[in-house]
Amino acid sequence: MTVTTPNASELVLVDSAGWVEYFGEGPKAAAFAPYLEREALLLLPTIVIYEVFRKLFRDRGTPLADRFLSYALRARGVVLDAHIALLAARASLDRRLSMADAIIYATAQMFQAELVTSDTHFQGLPGVKVI
Image 1 (cartoon, one colour):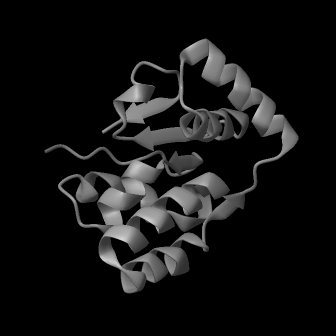
Image 2 (spheres, one colour):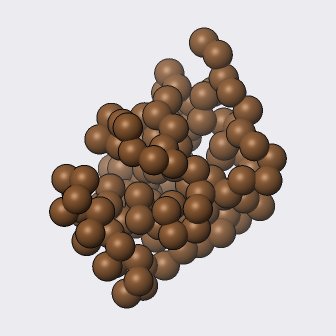
């Protein structure tokens, strides 16, 4: 497997699937590591916190969910505001994305961040790297 190194000055947003792979030690964990281990340039939308914490807590228990939270809160948190909500609504309609995916995509676009994911719903969208 070839792992590309992200641009050192570029903001990055890893979607929920990437965080779950990384903390759950899934088969793509190593591919997400270079992106998640750049705390200073890592954006973290509140919806990603919700999705990842919920999944890890439900599937793996409190210790792993808490470990994720401890690490994740060092990233740049991005709250869902009216501007992102409107961008997400348009992205959802234009690109047929679910609500959560649209919020994640709109957040990345607003901050001109690279969206890194393994979710094929984002395939072919500008600014997205699918692992």
